[in-house]
Image (cartoon, rainbow, N blue to C red; front, side):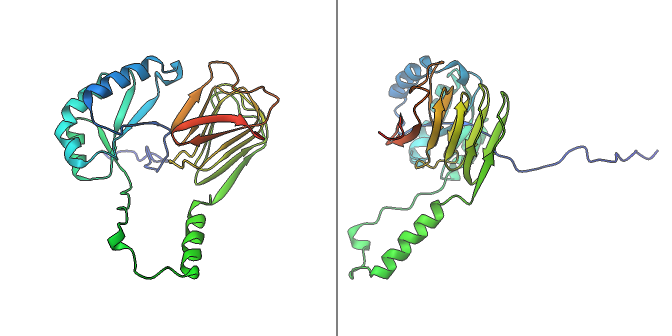
Length: 252
């Protein structure tokens, strides 16, 4: 008996971008981490109870991570948040991480610092210096801008991939704005905004009237528990100062 072929495919495989928080671990001192995590998680907002996290251990050496991975895994499993997996630059970590039931997310390998012995004997020319600066600026410029001129309702999510997001209307509570670049909001803002979603620490959020639930730059977030961080009639900006998230009046 021949099976009936459905007119439309039953499934598709497509690329997608999922919004998750990053829990960045700078040192693998398990005793100190236990204390720090307990204190941080005790203060977490209710919005993060169902949020997904990726543990970013890309600054930890492969040897140190592999030596303590089982104990580190159990520590993270004990936390009251959902951990999807671990991010690290060395593929040698991948098999061990997957063996514990976590996903592995590759991190970009950072360039080695240049020592004095590696520096050229001659001074670089003005032309070569200008070329390097121009190349760096071009890499950091978003490739496109998404403009939204209608209200963004609760439950809606708008994502500007590889660019800026400009919203000209009201953003309701429960709505979510995400951009790899900057976010500009010219209407009343009462939802969530996550700029620099792919880790750009230079991204900013510009808000005409702030009544936000949550703002985030490159994974560093802040919630306001129903209170505006600034008077609602003052245009404001959100940016990173080191690892601190700053909300300030636009003209301060």
